[in-house]
Image 1 (cartoon, protein in one colour):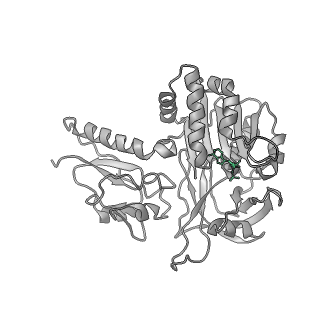
Image 2 (image 1 turned 90 degrees about the vertical axis):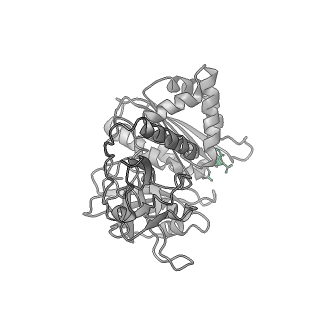
Image 3 (image 1 turned 45 degrees about the vertical axis):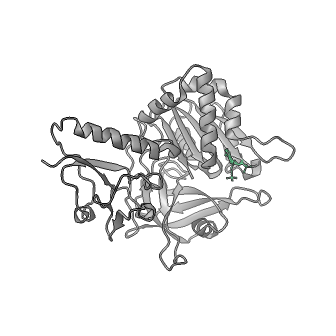
Amino acid sequence: MNKPLKQHLIDPEICIRCYTCEMTCPLEAITHDDNNVVVDAEKCNFCMDCIPVCPTGSIDEWRIVTTPYSLDEQFGWEDLPEQKDLGDSGGEVEALDDTIEALLAEAHKGAGGRSRAPASAAKPTVNLYNLGKPATARVQGTYRLTSEESGAEVRHIILDFGNQSLPVLEGQSIGITPPGVDAKGKPHLPRLYSVSSPRDGERPHYNNLSLTVKREDGGVCSTYLCDLKMGDEVKVTGPFGATFLMPDDPSARLLMICTGTGSAPFRAFTMRRQRVAAGASGDMVMFFGARTPDSLPYFGPLNKVPERLLKKHLVFSRIPGVAKEYVQDRMMVEQEVIAEMLADPATHIYICGLKGMEQGVEQSFKNIAESTGMPWEATRDVMRDEGRYHVETY
Ligand code: A2P
């Protein structure tokens, strides 16, 4: 038998074919054909540069093999082969696992670690529609959530899927591919947007969903989406995402921290609880940062959600004459509540929004946990392993 080795693979069922990994790999070990994006075992040196840039997590697949899967084999896959039983390797397999795990832990550091779905989450459908076979949705509504004066334009966009089935769970994303080509004449790559409506639709039992989109300066896809008019057709891929999901367990407690459009999945979580478990569920606590009240998406409707269902901490950084406040600052003010939640195994933490907030939020968690004698990193790692700690920042 050949010496066992760990082979890096890409899950064809989850990959959205955005080719970001291929463009990132310094060794040109990643290539694609019309079917799949694949890793050349002869070239990959486990530098892990491709791991954090993948928007779906499909890049994070490993198999221990004695003969590596060839490129041709990988091009032909519709799904990943199971791990084969290699029998007793005299500790070699375990040593390989440890090495790769250590490298992965390093690669995932910035993204909150390797995520797992909550134990009670429903099973998500992924990659039902791809670039070659997208779903076609029609714009059913588009309206501005933020005031003209606030400067930032964030829109609530409702897409109707007619008779096409696109099952999404709260926390999942869909891919939007803007029409046309880029400066190099290549078709645009898809961009991922979190769905901001619950699984049974923006309107219950209608086959529609909503997105929360901020118009970015020079942003090809956000400009395309924000300029859409009622009735326009949109090509959609997905759904994507198999870990940033809400627990179905009604007694689970949710601690949600977001900035700006990072609130999208939390709107979905909240509406899900309002529709199916109102009054009978674990508590939900939200820390939501925006520049001003009129630039905070869903400010009005959010304020109407009863505090007993959702405890809201709306935090503003640019109210004239008022000291700047970030979500991590308010977490310190509310440290007793957070410490109590951290100590409760029913608590699930979700962080979504600006990448910049990640470090500050972690620091607040660390301060709060350690002030009660709880080691933060170890607590966070246990929560992550149990599918109770999720980070999605951009
Ligand atoms: P700021 O006033 O410093 O831009 P945006 O409107 O750009 O989507 O941002 C949403 C909110 O997140 C704003 O209040 C913004 O404050 C705030 N923010 C920016 N950087 C950080 C950070 N590092 N940590 C926490 N919040 C941040």
